[in-house]
Image (cartoon, rainbow, N blue to C red; front, side, top):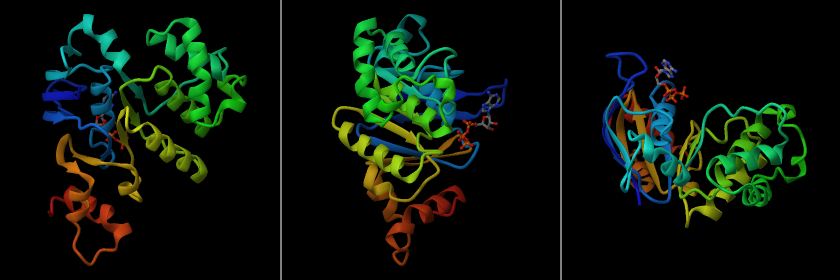
Amino acid sequence: MPIHVSRCSFGYRRREFVLEDLTLRLPSGCSVLLGPNGAGKSTLLALLASALRPSAGSVTLGDLDTRRRRDVQDYRRIVGWLPQQVRPVPGLRVREQTSYAGWLKGLSRQEAWERSRNALQQVGLEELADRPTAHLSGGQLRRLGIAQTLVHSAQVVLMDEPTAGLDPAQRRVFRCLLDSLRDQTTFVVSTHQTEDLAESYDSVILLDRGRIRFQGPIRSFLDLAPRQVAQERRAEAVYADLVAGEV
Ligand SMILES: Nc1ncnc2c1ncn2[C@@H]1O[C@H](COP(=O)(O)OP(=O)(O)OP(=O)(O)O)[C@@H](O)[C@H]1O
């Protein structure tokens, strides 16, 4: 069941829209969300996560509509979200915070505790399970955030720059994680890294100044690059042209 964004507008201030009249049907598989700083990626992800509500239009998943308060809890059980900032919960250790996230999503305390072990293994944090979350490094905190979005086996997982601040080995772990879950989970991942997109993602959504400049399969995106551009530079070239409005 895909998330459907229909004629959605949103602004943090009256009459100043960050996203305007946006329509989008999230494809299954792994989508990468690209766009320059300030394009509206985090805002779009927060709307998709139901953390923000559209000023106009709707975000729906089947019968669930994020504008209806009674739908929000069910919606959030299906949709997991890693925001740009992951905050340690004061006094909690790594496994406790992961487990707490699962409990907030409707798991029983016991189930949340049991599943938290697997979620921490998936991001390579099992050895830090007993460390206070306030003592984690930036990259470790980000991995904790990823574990929090995975703990309740959400069907749709939205991640806002999950690999920012991760070392190359951990980026690789992240790519393997997407690979291992892509059959059962729909991912939308925002990033500024345009290398190796074809290895990890099935489709691309490119936002610029609150509007969608491209949405479609990764192959169609890369095919927009001039022939002479080397394979590893194609995504960067298309990105630069679309954002500059030259394609
Ligand atoms: N809480 C807020 N209050 C007011 N304006 C905001 C707020 N958050 C974001 N904005 C504005 O909304 C616009 C879109 O911001 P957003 O964070 O969605 O962009 P982004 O594409 O995620 O950027 P980046 O790549 O830098 O993370 C920007 O102009 C930003 O200044």
